[in-house]
Image (cartoon, rainbow over all chains, first blue to last red; front, top):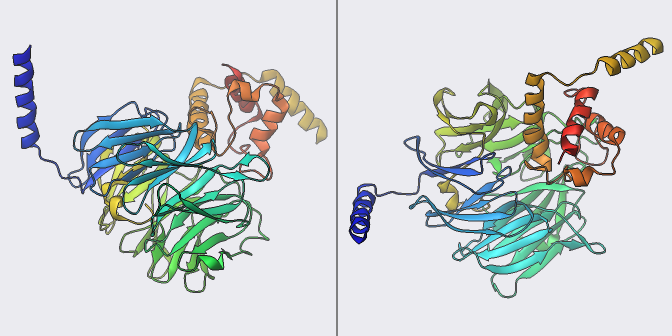
Length: 387
Length: 99
């Protein structure tokens, strides 16, 4: 038996040597229904591994350790799983809440924060051990706890998040891990549904579902409080039904413009980020869900809520025109650009496929199988503020 | 016109059967993924409330049908009547109520 083991060990070590793996161009694809995470080499379009039994991943998101070895997967069911991308294995896994929506990794990479619906609040863990570091309940009103959305990391070892039911933004400073300092911004607007951080860590912006506009926090001047952007936009118009909440992950910023989904309107809003005034509202195929800029910001890619979720539209930032409408397949859920943007990966849930496009020619490069894929997350996120 | 509507209503009621097997599978997929986007894949809730049998107990069919078809003002629940018929809503509620 010992002999077999040692032979096996030898075999594996030789094998490991033969397949030295770099992790800077890896990607995680979530299979929402099966609760799996697939690890891809995104340069070679090659599936390397399938990590199973990660629970309910119907709304999963992923952040990466700064050494790009570990992926932290946040599941809907409160599961937090640390995956070792060198070993294709689960390193640690905990169930930290009943119902969760997303997470973030701290500036120094040492903390993982998770935003929870039930029980409402955020929990912060050691990225190394997944031991609990802090528990911050989202208390408001009289004995109420809000669902928490739009959790991001911010410079200064801070986490920022929004309280959907309370209409508040909170900023938690973790410079002293044992005694985090929380600053609350109340009355930011009704039902913030998601938020984003600008890639330079300067602005935190929450989208509002319950009333028009967006809520802006300038991190260079937090004493000025939260300011409303476009408070009048769409006030008089009838709101179209929203069959899927938009996501604000990935700040689509190009030059002076910020691109954001309108809510209840089939439009992408172009906002001047010096004046925060509306430049244009570009009509698109449906309710935008993700509005994401190619890393060089020349293009903005948009996908849509049901029933228009078979399409993708590409806006040319040069003249704010619609360059093309693509039909990748049924239920286009998410997209992720390669680090420098020559390709984009698209998850097509009901066709059980990932489609890779060349972003210059807008032609398909390849299709890869994945069962009911939703999120796609590349390890290059490890070094981006707010992701 | 009213008579016609009434007649149509009665006719629908009388001839309403279960959705076809293809439609059932499409509806189940919709329930899991599109409703699930807010209510959770396992329907135990997300931004929207849980749709598990115990959560729906005590809520009358009429109320639930109206919620599905017309949405709920002041919440994120949109109207689905463009995509789901009255009978299909009833069928969905039956499914949801089964433990």
